Length: 251
Image (cartoon, rainbow, N blue to C red; front, side):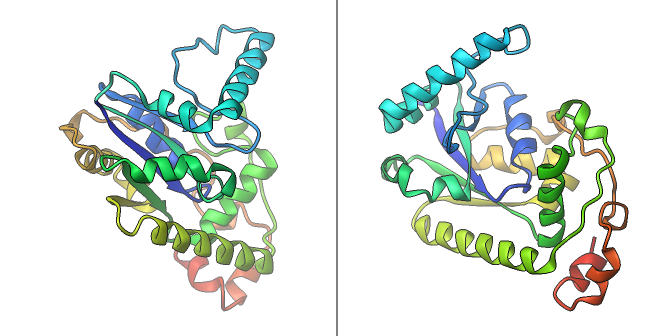
């Protein structure tokens, strides 16, 4: 039986980079978001999505949703039943902690061999800015298609940032409490982004896989502005506010 795992974190904490890099390695199968509210994303079943028609992609999505709705626990365990050495999926806090999937989570917690990877991001302001860019124009990485090259500037509502940060902090605490007795490997976004190969090798070691960091190539690269001044219209306001000044300067 393969090692089974789930990657959990807030949006914009590096899960796509981690999932795609893991999938580039022999012996690893990592699905995307299988517990989305209204869709199943990144289900790894070998489907040729590029050459599918739009109708075929729609029918496939509808089928996956029907299968998940009929038997959520069975759907997840079937997704993880792979001949690879390690098989997993990713879930946002909001999905993993959603009462709708309580039976799924309970089944994962009961499996003694199941492992959990918790993604976090130290610079919560940069995470929030990235989330706003995502909402307004698309993700900033090389796998995003043409949208990733667009220059997008956002205005940051500091009160909204503080509220969102508090919400995610509470969700992170709830996850830590839920997994307090289980094997958890914490991965910081900043380390994953700066030292991708080394960090992914550590993840593989946690999963019981012997992978040389020298053989790992990041599956994505970040594109777009490298500092907040280029993407935040009210950057000076962030500098002037005590709640955001240190985070803005730390960018």
